[in-house]
Length: 162
Image 1 (cartoon, rainbow, N blue to C red):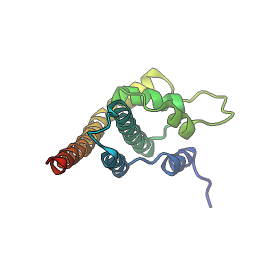
Image 2 (image 1 turned 90 degrees about the vertical axis):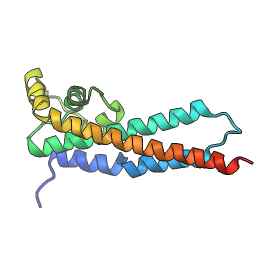
Image 3 (image 1 turned 135 degrees about the horizontal axis):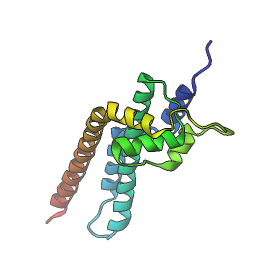
Image 4 (image 1 turned 45 degrees about the vertical axis):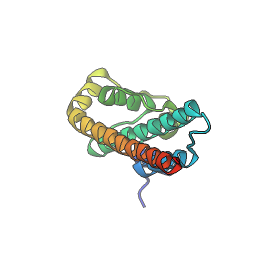
């Protein structure tokens, strides 16, 4: 049996430890909905938890996209390459902790052959349209989950009203 490539190992680590799909996002929003009450003022804490959930989802979708790129071209994915591609494609860096955990290689001493501005710019130019489509889909998913959450709050208020 052939040995797994470094990208395949990173992908396996990512999906095993950091998977956060739209369903996970919706579940976290629904959990907050279950805890929601107009009687207790917990807005800042709830907002922070929901914001963190949205950021996890955005990071998940960005890194899924990076793996799609890696499938179509031979990229030497290091944390720095991934961060720079995310900035070029999505204008966000994502979670540095997740990026290092997934793409870091203990003891690595050589620089990535792909870590040049011209290489990264060429890759970003080639995949920019697809990245915008991915980002639009991600934002649409988030808005849909938020609408369901708001509808749940309104429904709860209507049921609680005398």
